[in-house]
Amino acid sequence: MDQTADERRSENDATERVTPTIPPDASERYLAIFNAIKEFSESDLIELPLPQFSNTRARTIAHEVADLFGLYHRSDGRGKDRFVTIRKTVPPTTSGRYNPETQTWEECTILEPEKLMILFKINNPLVSIFPASKTILMNLLFLRLPQIIK
Amino acid sequence: MKCLTFNVLYDPPDKRAADQIDYTFTSIRTPLIFEFLSKSDADIITLNEVSREFFESIKQQTWLQNCYFITSMDSEFLSPGNLILSKFPIKTSFVHQLKLSHKAVNIAELYIPGTEPSSIWLATAHLKAGPVATFARMRYAQTKEMIEQLRYLAPEGQWLVMGDLNIRSFEKEEIPHLNSTFLDVWTHFNSNDSDGFTYDPWNNTLAEFASSRISSLESTRVKMANRYDRILIRSKNALWKPTGISILAKEPLGEFPNKTPLYLSDHFALEAEFSSSA
Image 1 (tube, rainbow over the protein chains, first blue to last red):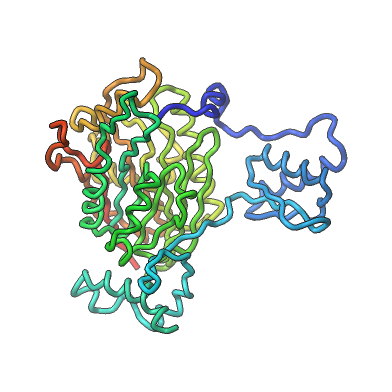
Image 2: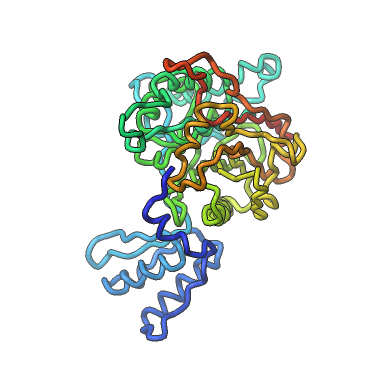
């Protein structure tokens, strides 16, 4: 309802994304990272790992430049293996379904639904005759059948 | 495929008046909202303004447990209150933080058996509210960002957008990229100047109450009805065709203890149906 501090700060900002520019005093390393990220932002790729820029300073630059382009960025790994990965979309979150056996909501993994479909066609003639049966079939197919197979 | 979107009105305790009284009667409305959602039997439901309490409570509902997948396992991903319930399995889900505000867009890829392609990409968001030009510019940018995310994830996909987009139809707020990308199901079945108000302070006392404090700016505290909630579709190869749309939860269900009419929320719900050509 009320504005947040960020929103108040941004009131006078242009909402259109401004194309980032290279600072005049940019180092060669900055330039290399900037160009790699710029090229990525213009490509169809979703994710760009940057293991070639793994030292602390390079990672800092990668985070800064990713921010300029409005991209997601995070460091993973330890020691010399630590590097930044840049993404255009946030990594997936977990969805859930209820497991009646444990009576808890559990992280959901779809068990190759295409294969399940071969076993049990949702376009079963029964569905067109009794629309309510669709819910029952869906329930059986996606909630119960994997458990029965197990 | 029946799709329903509903802003269920969160009344945060820290925004209440000094008396700390819940004038929106959350504890009375919540079970009635559950009953309404259950009876709707919609295949896809998007909710906005879902509080952690509402989220924990809805997860205990048998109808939800029996039939629906949910996008959020943890209330940490709820912020700022978007929740997707789907009878179709959720293959992947994302929470994308929108720039320049605390708002987010939730995107889920739903697996729909028997269609080709077998996925539909659903996005729900509760965009920045408010009548001033700055907020309109934010909505303009936020809708652009939402489309950008859908393009990254599924450039050729079937896209469905549902939720409280806060677009001020009364002022003819125009968002060209939204209009050019999607079919607005309401205007598809109704003329452009048809009201379609899903938020109406003149006919919903909860909306009247909410609009009295929607902004800290005195000048923007106006009672204005709007078509804030939308259902939009981009259906490639005309796979999904809208077959109808209606506004629900418009009538009071009785009275609150203070004798004001009992509405489920300050918004009305919006429900659309689609048929598949597959």
